[in-house]
Amino acid sequence: MKSLLEVKNLHVNADEKTILHGLNLSIRPGETHVIMGPNGAGKSTLANVILGNPSYVKTKGTITFDGDNITNLPTDEIARKGIFMSFQSPEEIPGISVMNFVKTIKQKATGKSVYLGDLKAELDKNVKSLNMNADLVLRDLNVGFSGGEKKKNEILQMLELNPKLVILDETDSGLDVDAIKTVSKGIAMYKNDSNAVLIITHSTKILKKLNVDYVHVLVNGKIVHTGDGTLAKQIEENGYDKYIK
Image (cartoon, rainbow, N blue to C red; front, side, top):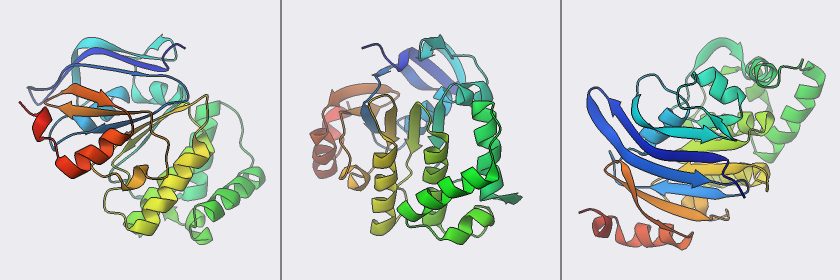
């Protein structure tokens, strides 16, 4: 099976400092990948680079998604091709309700009109599954939301957009046990044999209810070791010392 995402020999700079040093990563449809590593290893940089964040400069290598070279595409085009990213700290946007935001991004992603009645029915179903407050979809996006509510809202957007690839950048950071269970449930609801998930995390809590295919250890801008789902537990127990030279 061909790769959905293929990152080859990727070198990336930011603020005149090299962060990624020849990183390689291949993700096929149906797979769940996890990236773990010490602080400053380049985990969030990789996520941002895949989405085309202009703060990072690619100096070498390629990123291919679903057969297309997206290395130098702007973020909006990359997103429309079917990549979704959940952020560590979602932005607050006053004046735009969650429902209208979801309607707008869904229309932009699909190029089709979205009818509020149909969208409301879908949102209500997913809000209930995610154990969210139903009133949140009528409030301004993330304004006054708790940390858990913001992260659940990101998962809600993911379910509505149904992208080909989801990148979760420390979505579990700062969440209590119940919120982590909800986020894990949302990921399980989304996952199927045609899409893929890339999870960046420091913890194994979000992984406990998921079927993880590969865990990658990222150190100093390179993936230095890859294993199956059990590797995450080993790292939690023993740390990264054996991988840091």
